[in-house]
Length: 411
Image (cartoon, rainbow, N blue to C red; front, side, top):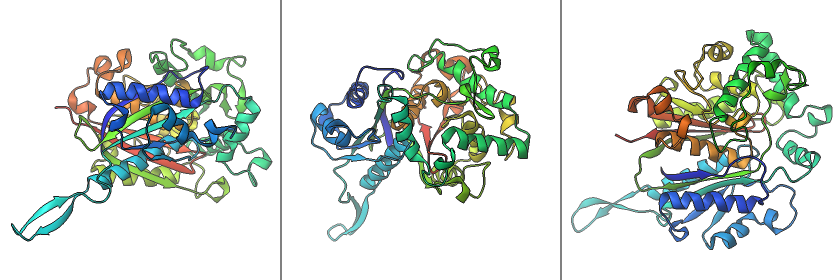
């Protein structure tokens, strides 16, 4: 399928509810596409259904129906932090199926013609993710988020998400010599990028190396991960309109893979198998290799997650993630800019909106709408250097992963 438009709200603290934030993002996406809601044939939402208090949470699809004045099917795809990516994957699969012609024999002309299959009434699909995380108590939100990990064997022993990712970091450091300073470089890079992104939580809030060295500003959370190694909960929404009508941006690879929930069932604690599987499938479907990717939006819920993803996605060899970030390759001025938006780390992580917001950043970069963060301005990127981008969205500690490859068809 193709991307018609993509839009998002500012990530941060908002007085609006989740469905109001979703409405804001959807209206903006429709306006950018110069479309009316009646032109949308299907909606796929990644909303996670937090707190389950009232109809706005339990029946989010009906709330969207009421606000958008539409009666089309609304499919929800809750999949922890990967909900937005799964929504995009689902929409793309449905849309591709609708566009696939069936060859039949024409008895009159004795030639082959193309006939739409039963899903042919689906041409434009709206994908939306939205979350409200700041108005509920930290304890309540933590309880809800922890449902994305094993609650019986691991959380009972204190192995919550920061601790899980700390184990990943410890193992990577032990096996490959990765350092705490390597992780700090990732955080600093993403904060520098978010500082230039008006939609980011840390817009115009630049940090420096001294902030990372300060125990007061950057206390230890779960060794070796410090506060600035962890992403922040925010309110926000993002929306994208997919279409079978050709546009300048095409989804040429889309994959979704899963893995065991508890870490003790994993084959390795230094990589995410689901990312590797999804990446291989997405690259094969797209007909490209990792070497052809020009920039990427990765799931950096923790800095170690981004570092490991460099390796899992084939941007560097296994165990070389530390060298990759030290080389400045992932910086805004590097050969493969990573998380130009600021990533989850500094743009913010409103869960189901995260995966969709990655698409927003890629679309804005391709269409030169990313403002002062635009890589064509920063690096004088040619069309060849703005051809392929990927978005990687992770649920839990690698239990579900989507990888999407987008192509810029602009000549």
